[in-house]
Length: 253
Ligand SMILES: Cc1cc2nc3c(=O)[nH]c(=O)nc-3n(C[C@H](O)[C@H](O)[C@H](O)COP(=O)(O)O)c2cc1C
Ligand code: SF4
Ligand code: SF4
Image 1 (tube, rainbow, N blue to C red):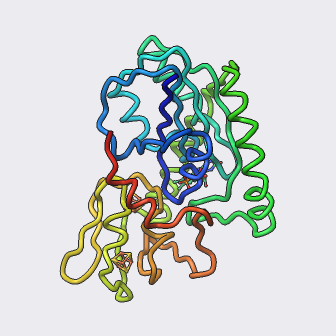
Image 2 (tube, helix red, strand yellow; image 1 turned 60 degrees about the horizontal axis):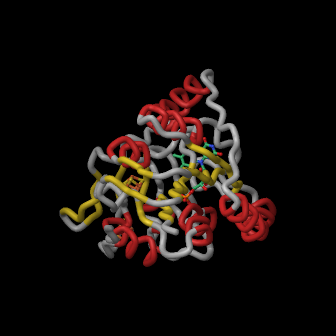
């Protein structure tokens, strides 16, 4: 029985879930080449970004072919997955395939403009193993459910991106004098959007807003627009270190 679990993760939540759902190591959609994949079960684990899948997930699924009788998806989210499952269901439908099972799981918010309250973070993280075990059992028994697509949510998605990129100025990304040129953000970035130039980290235009660079920077030296986070208020999943995300960024199948 062959199974493949694909994942995308900025701050470790989805990687942590994907590792628990996969029998072997999950495959990073930001590092794997789109191709034809054949298996008895293929799963996708990724976060919801403004109610949609992250751009690298959409691209990978669009450009790949999945020869598989059972496709499933699990979305990690800080409140409401909205259309993150529904979009993948639609993408697969366009290829003549069916997303048989979709499930969301609440985990602390990775976006730098919100912070899941400490007590809720603890509650969700301590419930994670049990919830993932239940999802794994449902996948093993080949559960099927209806994944909804909320048409009206597209407007909220577009307004949220506009608010982040334009009103909060997050299109303007920079490193401050605190940058120690450690290159961690360069290695973490799933889209290869960061370089070290003139003694500092500099950002290009190919950002999917995973916030991995900001949340992990050892010196809190990255600013997106007007948003500033204190050292204490940043979040990354406690079981997933930056070095694991970096190692997985290089992994190809
Ligand atoms: C740009 C961005 C947008 C987000 N939008 C949503 C959202 O619309 N709904 C939600 O519930 N969580 C949202 N989140 C929170 C993430 O989905 C959640 O924290 C997820 O578990 C992060 O997964 P990761 O650690 O694997 O990157 C957003 C996070 C980011 C970075
Ligand atoms: S992770 Fe932070 S300190 Fe290291 S190179 Fe990037 S911006 Fe500079
Ligand atoms: S620049 Fe930062 S937020 Fe943008 S894709 Fe790279 S790591 Fe993620």
